[in-house]
Amino acid sequence: MRIATWNVNSINARLPNVLEWLGCNRPDVLLLQEIKCQDENFPSMDLKAAGYDSAVHGQKSYNGVAILSRQPMTDIRTGLPGDDADTQARWIEASIDDIRVASLYLPNGNPAPGDKFDYKLAWMDRLIAHSKDLLYTEKPVVLAGDYNVCPTDDDVYDPAGWQNDALCRPESRTRFRRLLNLGYTEAYRARHPAAKHAWTFWDYQAGAWPRDLGLRIDHLLLSPEAADRLGECGIDRDPRGKDKASDHTPIWITLS
DNA sequence: ATGCCCGGAACGTCCGGA
Image 1 (tube, helix red, strand yellow):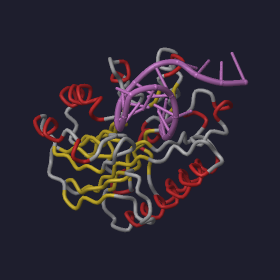
Image 2 (cartoon, chains in turn cyan, yellow):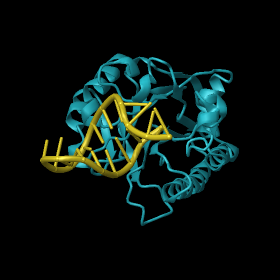
Image 3 (cartoon, chains in turn purple, green):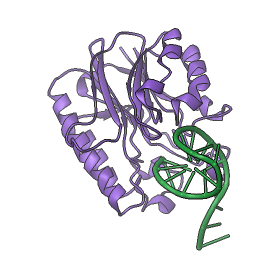
Image 4 (tube, protein in one colour):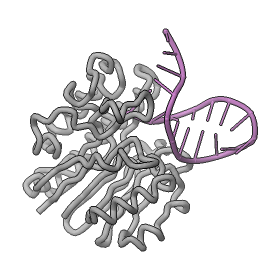
């Protein structure tokens, strides 16, 4: 099974790019973030015509996550548990075959310090709690998406310049490590321990893409039962160079 | 020292992004 994740920065602006990529790569599952639309405006029919069912958790203008799957999805749940007052659409999970899959869009958190950074850290604490609950199922779990965290200085083009950014601050990195310490495996580092410049995001501004000034912030975390089945993991840079590209590019794994 | 580029909402320009 091939599972990919891609922050598309608006599914409706990016639909031609997504359909082209699905047609060329045929993943079994594609997890989407920043769909930037309400559920009723999600292009489910176009994606169904391409062979994919959709599970959608959207909101107007901002955020929004979805799961595309060639196989049926069951037990779809939306919203990260732990705060009933949180209205931001950043979490959806579903069962596909024997695997529990989540598409997540972790808050950016800038400026830090501030209210947005506090929200990010609280969201990460809820993610840690829920991820722990999912481990107790002892089933394959894949938690993937835009984590908005550069786990180490190797994951940012200018560590010194970014050290106070919410993506790199120690409070964010500590919480990311806490997820790993629960027993989750970060797929890309597991397969490419020494890789440098393995970016998944390049800003639209200042020529970041042609200068290859990027960040590695999109990740797939695997429970032990999923990590046992990990085959390959790769970052597909091609979509970032296309016309009308998202600022993120897809990252994928294979599971046996 | 600051903004650069995008998409959404909406039609003037601001918010959010990372």
